[in-house]
Image (cartoon, rainbow, N blue to C red):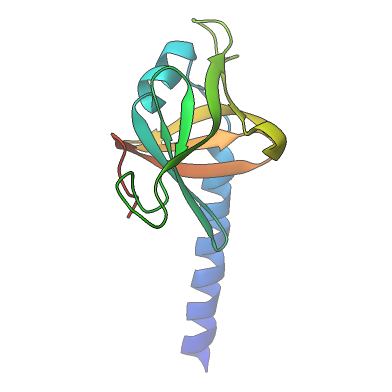
Length: 139
């Protein structure tokens, strides 16, 4: 019985630590305009929230492409779902990545680096994403 309580206590402590680390990711040095463009342009952003998963290719020039089953799939091919852009000053941390899905809405995020290929998109909450080079399927 004692062993079980210790394990449950460690899991709860670990969960609190992870939540604290996630919250800390939205503080600190945000990416500037050039850094966001370098991090996202020509790359696929892989995101998840709960059971919802998505993969969007950030085409150079601003098109936002939902990868779906891939550009050559006959049933569910990739398609443009909106546009993306970066706004702000080039030197400061006021930069934001902006998404426009037309009638599907708009959103803007400040972007913070978490390590190689991982970023926190912060704006009304935090979304941790991974970024892969090219237009590819997320794992």
